[in-house]
Length: 441
Image (cartoon, rainbow, N blue to C red; front, top):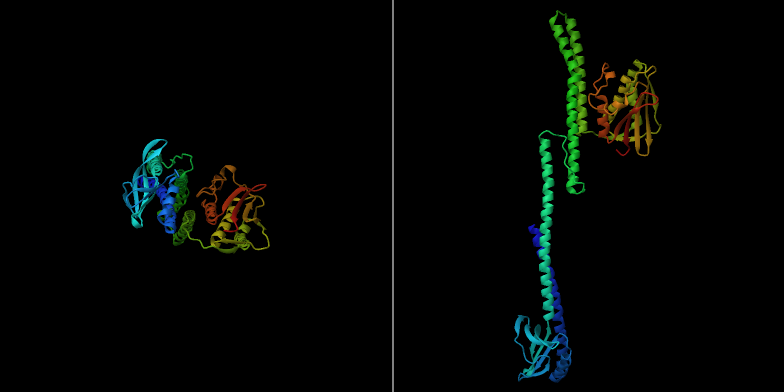
């Protein structure tokens, strides 16, 4: 507020000074022009020529003031009857007051002039009536004083209103923040709807709060799913060891139990490693090194890697790939893992009388779509949106091997590459998983 008052006052002071200086400068310039004219007349014709010129100029009823006085102090020409009481203002300038008759009325007017003592004792005064200029300056000064007062008043009034409104909105944000810190993650910052900076801040904070709430819900879901899905294998592992210790067993029995325990521990480690990978990818904490890859070659390698597993259960693969290479900017290990996970998911859950897994690629402008489709039972529409969440396993698949992290890991990998994972029903039956990427990634 102090800066506002100082700047406003300085602005009005500058405007007043500039206006008065302009008027004063014009007056002084007019006087100097008269002096130059009279000086030229004096140099050419002496006192007589100067007196005639002063007499002619004095007949003009405008603002000019002239007075030529002889050595005895008697007025020779001009529109003043005597030498006025002059006040020095510096640089040869004088100010004085004189009696002026206007519309048969006598008025005291202010004037500004220069005076000269000529050879042989003659005296010359040349000036201007500045009464109107002074009145005009006073009007401007009063107007600026009132204008400054109104500006300060409305500025203070507007500042108070804006400050109170700003304070109320900040208090609202603080109250919401306090509720959130107290544990109510569903609270959101109220928006005014004006679209101003505070509203934009509120929208960004609400988006952040929504993301935090989603992450906290996801953490709770992960915790519940870990307790549900990992409790059984850990209990089996413990019971197996306990039963082995409770009964007599040969070294071969111990060896078999240890081998089974190691295998089950490896499965648990694989689950935790997958969970860690998903968390790191979603949080952006895992550094990935992208390179130019031929996506056609990448798909073929993934299919070749999974073909032996497919042959064991009688699954045939169908490839629909273009001949020309298509380059993408991606991390080879992660993208290979995503493709292998989709194929593995189709092998596990895409059972049919004649199981077929179709792997292909479509390209439309800069959009690249890699798909893996099976002809199995598919996924119910109500479950389609949640199967990419961590540890989500549908009831029909709980008796089959798996951790429920495969599609979660694929989704995290694709999102880290700037793409998205889409799931929908395959025609006429089955599930079709699509990795959608842009070629400039």
